[in-house]
Amino acid sequence: MKIKSLDELIKMREASVKKVNLRETGENAGETIELMVGMATCGIAAGARETLQSLMETIQTNGLDNIKLIQVGCLGFCHSEPTVQLNMPNQEPVLYGNVDKDTAKKIVEDHVMNGKLVDNHILIKSFDKA
Image (cartoon, rainbow, N blue to C red; front, top):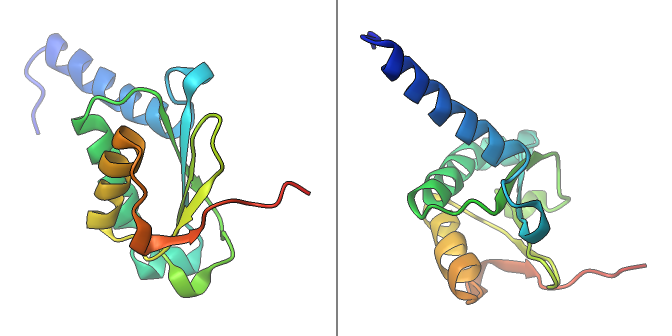
């Protein structure tokens, strides 16, 4: 791609910075929702890169700026990779398994945006706080 003007370059930079912020910090820390994607070898082999990409695209398409998308190592459920843990403020974490790109989109649109669990992919609904 050839950059034809300084304005084009600035727009490209802003889009890139927005993607990095989405992955690293989220934009509204007080109400931040965390989506943690297992990116260990087992997750990557099972398609976690596509899952991560789908989550990122769905978040951007819907203009959600309060989600922190985090790449993590093994979440301990290799048999159900790709795995995604959803941490919403004031709610118990939910661990989803076998999350392909379509399921990733449903997690954002159904659970995050509308409060509906994606039941057929839930591995754990709450965690021990010990």
